[in-house]
Length: 113
Length: 116
Image: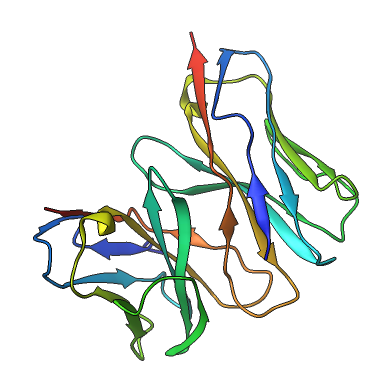
């Protein structure tokens, strides 16, 4: 099976712009979670989607949003970018059952200038 | 809310030696999962080992084993016969088994250096 893929891998945006990141889970997986990784805050949970519904949400402002499509692919959107949004954004997929492992993608490195 | 703490920002070990990485967590839940993830320079997060809180037996995966002390809320990772490829950032993570979802709470990470 192919692993979790994230596109694009690298992105440079200007403050005030918006950005959309994409995550394709492993085939058959129905859950996709998003994490932000920064040197200062570490790894922080953004949100999780399961069968096109948001199942969990972390403590991020409303500028951060996401969605999941019927094929389980997920997108996250950040509007009105701030310098502090520069980070590695990781997504993880799992089948969705309670005991299931999560498999991470390679991440998208977002730089906001 | 659950918290995970890794008190060792950096650790180093000689190749072929054994090293132990520490992790403590705080939770009021009784049913949960604990994980160790490895993040090499490529930034790809790789699951190293997992432990179910209801299991008293410590998990092992080849050269990797854990010391799970539920009462003390401690979850350390032992790497035996360290190899150069073990050099990476290691994260301890918690996941509730009492609420739905796959949300992971991570510690700050421990950067492991393996010296030849």
